[in-house]
Length: 127
Image (cartoon, rainbow, N blue to C red; front, side):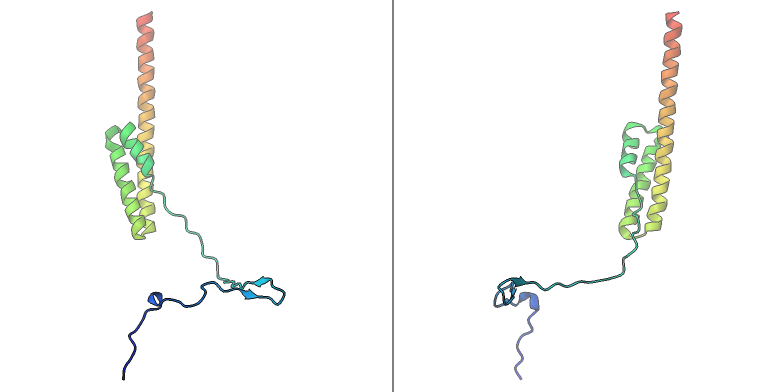
């Protein structure tokens, strides 16, 4: 028994017109429509990794190397998100956000202390 070689449908060329319209008797084209109804899937928000904020904390204001820790946890959060572990990504993202918040707070307090000290010194020198 001779069997024809198995052809996969995507490699077999099609014959005839690719797009055929059904013509109405009055000459107006008819189109076939397909409607697919399904249950809407719940939208799960993606966890945030705060990578941009962490990089800015690392470059611009990095007291006690907290910016580096924020970048570390941001990258871990992104890795967890890529693997599909959304709960782990959320946990690492929250840790990165905490480090970023502490870094920003310490930087603002440090700058405020610097400006007040500079103002006091300038005031004492002037009088």
